[in-house]
Length: 367
Image 1 (cartoon, one colour):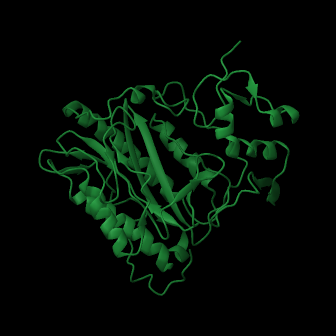
Image 2 (cartoon, rainbow, N blue to C red):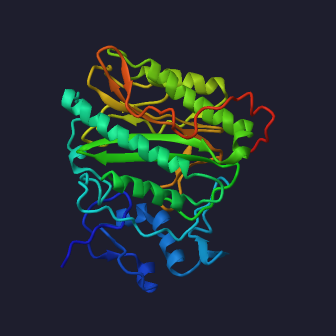
Image 3 (cartoon, rainbow, N blue to C red):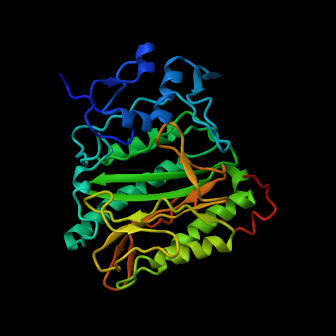
């Protein structure tokens, strides 16, 4: 009998014979758990399966397709809603080398890493990182160029996927059928694997003219962009990694914004999320200093309101508890003998870019 994986979202154990009784009554297949405790711990998210399987969702006809909110009774905190169905998973050709986390999302090698031991790349490793970062920047720019009011995030995922496959790389993302509207801000996050190495970068973009006229949106996006730039200016050999969070949080507070503290930067090279962990807030206790050959990301998330966050029932989408908007920027960095090389730096031709907060001062305000 083939091994069954536990249905608990936070569990990678083999499932036993315990099945969800509601799923059994509704003839929903595959809901096995490893233990009663695991079942109870995951009940809040697992129970959404019952409503979805029973067709208990609201349908909306859009053109020739029917879309729906899979979690209609979930107490959403903001205005954004999931718009299903999701497209089938886009295949990556077998000719493309896959990282060890490609199928499960969990890297077995990273689990075994000593979190206090950092890797420093030799010259060959640094050159391999330059190759993968070039592809990552190209993919982000191609995807951002396709962004405009009226397209869906699913379409942008298709553009991104095709650009990745052309370069024989793998990326990640979970989009849906939501149509972008003039006034949205959108974060595009590219994680790319090529030649045995990873690169990560992301930027937040304005969707349409109304977004660029929204003073709160511009304050949020530009302050986040500046906070990353200010932190990167500090990077050089000997600088403690705990110092980055101090300047990021100080700049955020100066514009009445909050740092989302759960998420941070990380090492990146042949592994996706190796040490060190890079906090983006002040008074953190991160140990260690920058040294030549260290490659890592800085990727602050700032919020218009509070920094408490929560997950949607899809166990992936992370939102603020108060429903206010956030922005994020990320670069992959290499510490050199004399300072810093921003591996994923913008090109002159890159879409988007900074705008003046003064130009948006008379724009509409929304949160």
